[in-house]
Amino acid sequence: MQVILLEDMPNLGGIGEQVSARDGYARNYLFPNKLAVPASVNNAKRLAHEKRVANFRLAKAKAEAEGVAKKLSSTSVSIARKVGEQNKLFGSVSAHDIEQALTEKGAKVDRRKIELAEPIRALGDYEVKVKLVGGVSATVKVSVVAEA
Image (cartoon, rainbow, N blue to C red):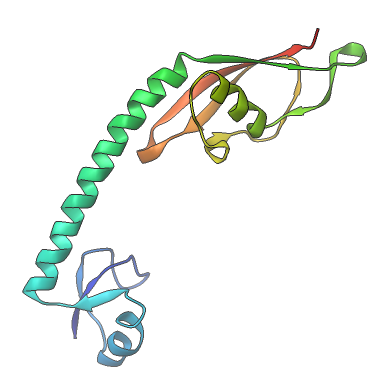
């Protein structure tokens, strides 16, 4: 049976490909789980239209993300923390703290998009990467200073 895949399937094909699948596999697994539709002219046209709409939305979101990335790249934030002897921080600076500092500067960023391998535990200047939509990323300068 010929089917058009709606999702990537290992060992079968990618999204939008027309492939041959066994009748039982298609009827009992692919169709009920909405992983494929029967190959027909109407289904092929509908899938092509959905792809065009998705590509248009992605291009629009990517253009907006590039504008946000420019704004973020020129932004630097300063985070004050208490320090003890030998300038060691009490606690650390996490993605949540960076998110709050960026929000105060007027840049709304989800903390899950902020890439920190581990929390910042020392004073100094750091460059933190922020991932945005469509593979666009920005680098924010973060300064951790001693609280007065």
